[in-house]
Length: 343
Ligand SMILES: NC(=O)c1ccc[n+]([C@@H]2O[C@H](COP(=O)([O-])OP(=O)(O)OC[C@H]3O[C@@H](n4cnc5c(N)ncnc54)[C@H](OP(=O)(O)O)[C@@H]3O)[C@@H](O)[C@H]2O)c1
Image 1 (tube, rainbow, N blue to C red):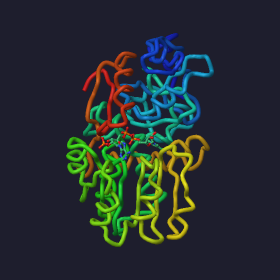
Image 2: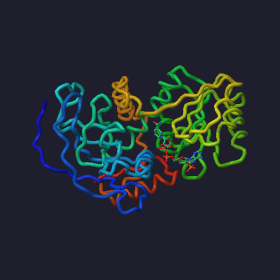
Image 3: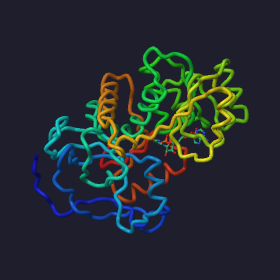
Image 4: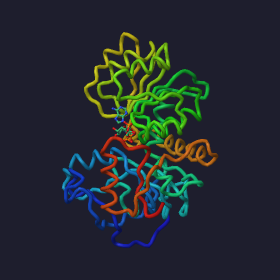
């Protein structure tokens, strides 16, 4: 075990009451106790950059029922400063990136404990800010494409991506184009988001705000699409029954509870859920996330995929994080919003 000089407290941004982002105690600057010296598989990381995901916004907005300050934030890039006695994958001084576990204290703090098995080596060609954009969405996209849809480098056919310009869609399009043979139909409703998904490699772009979305998709895939990735599923079952071919497959990541899946039975369409916190929550096959992040870093460093960071806000404090939450909360962010002390 590596020991470190302990200071009593560290700076952090905490959610004291949660709720509206503009509420007085939604996100505030604070000091919190220094995390303990790491044990087991834990790394203690000095956090250099974080990115804000919709989950940060949802957890903050749902309110802080526990009544104690909560450190939010999952995506992070930083440097390992100490390791537990069972750690084998990293050493102090290594640069890392990770999305962590939803039940543990988050990344809006200058130091954070995280299990090495869900951590990857930071892409060496990226700054901390550029790297912090990738882990949560990269793991989600990786698990959706490869664990759930079962795509391989030999896969062909058409993949429809709903929510393509968002954080997850932006990395998922790139992974699908780099590592499989599928054609990507991406949805985007504005010139900025259309241009962004085109730059990431989308083959066809359709407008999800148009009344004839089904006709646009079937014009590009006349027999129906083989696969769907959706981060925007609300009200979309009728669309899927029309545009997915028999025996097609859908993977969804959002929180729509009232979908009429039975409508998919006639075409024997499969529905998969993907949740990137499942592995850390259940301690299931954790190292798969280390491997995914390692592979993504390699793909970045050889220039086959790129960071999805579109904005870096500085510095890391409550005011900046509130601003990032406001942008993500619009539901129309393009790529990823990062908060860091420098670009
Ligand atoms: N299960 C998991 O593990 C997991 C992981 C990550 C995220 N998620 C969830 O997945 C959802 C998306 O996350 P994200 O980070 O990709 O979000 P995001 O970055 O906030 O997504 C914004 C994008 O969504 C597009 N969009 C908005 N409304 C749409 C609609 N009705 N139809 C199609 N596209 C629409 C927008 O495109 P335009 O501006 O062109 O309209 C915008 O580019 C969130 O609910 C998040 O909590 C789940």
